[in-house]
Length: 116
Image (cartoon, rainbow, N blue to C red):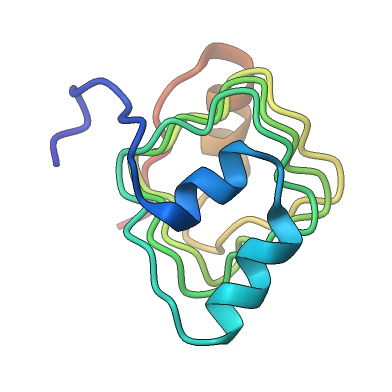
């Protein structure tokens, strides 16, 4: 999906759990084998603390003003995502994202690009 499209609010049941603040239930269902497609989705303003993000593709996601504190995104695909004004204390980002990319996205809403 192109990064110029608007973020989507999906009817995927796992995505809806996150929108409803049910992060633990989301993690339990993923551990049981369910796999969501989270590309280009709208995570704006959600509290995602405690999210098990390993292996998720959240590329082109929109995380404006989300609470991402303590989330380990090191094994998550985030290229093209925007984290404008998100809470990121203790968040671990993928190595492919430079500190500059993360800062630009956090401060100005730019979409993060992976290094070559």
